[in-house]
Length: 94
Image 1 (cartoon, rainbow, N blue to C red):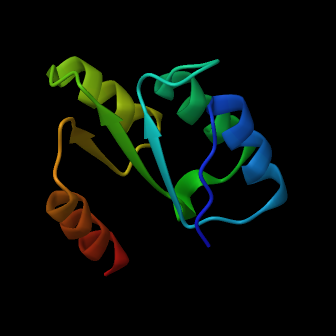
Image 2 (image 1 turned 30 degrees about the vertical axis):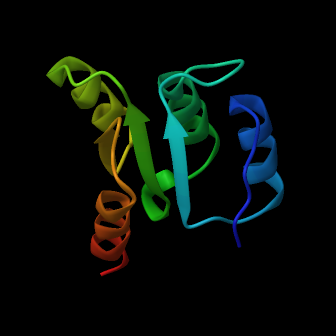
Image 3 (image 1 turned 45 degrees about the vertical axis):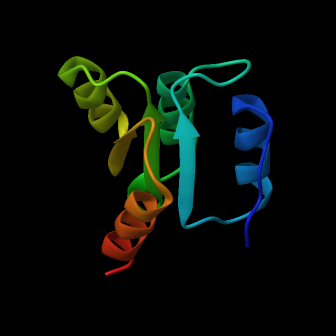
C-alpha cells in the first residue's frame, strides 16, 4: 500500500494506525525535519523491521552518519534518479 503524507506529524499519525515496511522521509519536511521524524518514530515503534530511506540535499558525511545513527536504513542524496531509487528498493527487498 502506498500512502503519501504532507509532513512529519501526519506521517507519524498514519504509522500509528497502519503497518508499513518502508518509509521514505526527507530531511526538510513541514512541521519537523527528517532527523526528528526518525527519532520520534524510533522512540514510538520498533523500527528494526521498517526500511527507512532518508533523502537530503546535504551530502556531508555528518548528516548521513546522523541519519544512520537514528535508524535510517539508507540515504539518498538529492537529486537522485528514479533508477537509483529502484535499485535501492530492489536491494532492500532481498
